[in-house]
Structures are given as C-alpha cells and as structure tokens.
Image 1 (tube, rainbow, N blue to C red):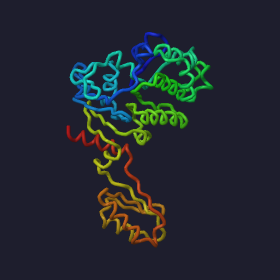
Image 2: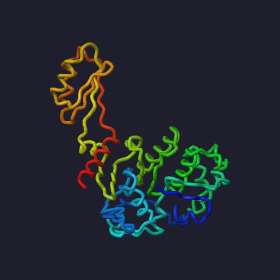
Image 3: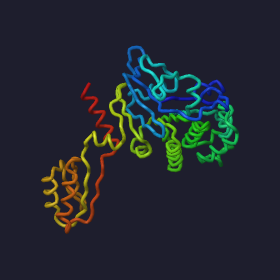
Image 4: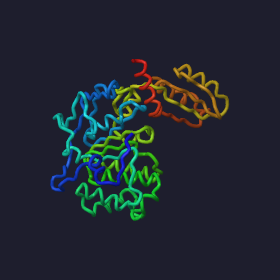
Length: 332
C-alpha cells in the first residue's frame, strides 16, 4: 500500500516519527478509537463513516479488497491524511495526530526500500539515533528478528524476507505502544513468520496495541483478536473470528472415513439437514448448516460399525470474508 524509501534523514521523520527525548518517551497508550471517519479525495469517497477501536492488549486485523479504504484508514492513523469528518480519540478523549502521538507508533509499510550501500546494522543505528533509542537496543532487536549474522552485510544482498525483517526491526525498535503493520507477511519464510507471530504475541501480552492490514486472513487469524472487514470505504464487519463465523452461518464440512457401502450414511446425513453429501475415496463428505451439526454427529454413533474416523472443519476465514463482501455487495 505504501512505498517508503530509507536512505536520507528527511524521509525518516514522516514515517517513523520525529526525534524524541528519551525522558519524554511515552510509556503506554490507552484504547485508541477512530470515530466516524470519512475521507474524500475529489469525487472519490475513500472512507464513509468508519469507526474502529484498538484496545489495549489486542491485535486487530484490517482486511478488504483493493480500494476498500485500508490504506486511507492507516494513513489517517499515521497523520498522513486528515479526515473530512470524524476524530481520533484515546480513552474517549479526542486527540490530534501530532508529533506526540506519532512518537507512540511503530510502522511497517507494505513496501520499504533501503539504501543499498548501507548494512542492516547501519540502517538500524540510523533509526535508533532518529528515535533517541540507546545503541544496546539495536543489538537486541537484531537478535529478535534473526538478523544478527547478517547485520554487517549490505542491504543489497538481503532477500525480500530479510528486508521485511529489517523493516519489522525498525517498527519495534523504540518499543512503541502501537504497532501498525501493512502486509507484514510479504516475503517471509516460516522462520520469518515465527518472528512476526512472536512480536504480535509479545505486544498483546504486554498490553500494547497492534493494527495489521493484510490479505493473509487464514495465516494471521489465530494471531489477532478481532477482524475488521472494509469494502468500498465502509466497515461491513467487525468482531472476533469466532463471532464472524457464527454471524456468517456458513456450512461446516464433516468427513466420515468409512469402509464398505456408504449409502446408508449418506442418506442419514441428508435426513438430518446436510445441504451437500457425496462419497469420495473411502469417505463421506457433508456440508452441514451449523445448527444441524450436532444432529449430524449422531450419524457417527448410529453407523459406528462402518465408520473409522471423523473430521469436522469450520469454514476458512477466507470464506467468511467473501461472505461479508457478497452480503455488502447485495445491500448496495
């Protein structure tokens, strides 16, 4: 969503925040709200009366198709876009997105470009100086993101995943109360994902806030507390993953592994309200409305002599997301 170039001191102030006095660095942040935010660019309504709250100790996932307003909402929070209507508030009190608030933010943009001739260590030291962070913290953060061994190599030789880790290191360097991550999974291998997941867990455990704008719903579902879905500048859903699944009411996939003739099992599932039933590779697979799930489980007990195993799969978060997008489309 945002391309940030790091290679000149002037670029730092707008992205990471202006230099801060260590003695005045904020120690915490209350619940932060974006209240009834509307933004218009010419004839384009980028956001329409959008409200979200970031709670202490919580990670909120922000999702939506291209053009939904995710970038604009993030930019409002960063102070890069001034809303036409609405306000930002902390613990219910209106605040300005000024230098003081920006000093409490750590930001990882979707695309971040570094000066190719600098080493990872030099990049972090530069940002540490800009944020008045002690040098010892630089080494700690390099270890935290797994870049200690590559710290003295120039960024030119970094893979995409290593660059992403370096960007994450910059975001967490000053231990900000609020972490804003824009498509943070891009280019990360399993080790890099573990680093990201660990950072999110740490921020939540320490009572900080995190906003994650992403397309990787399934990958990050278990790492966040709530999900906000945007479409065409409007908020169309906001709740926990479990609550959104319940609201969507999508069928659950039930699979009975079986031996022998499966027709009786198939008929029993249909009789109990399964909407789609078919046999495949020694299994009977049924799509069951949530309210009929327990009745479908009874089939296992009734046909225990033929059934070898049972698997129940909830609809994926991607399916739930698509449901709310379709629902929003139908309402317009």
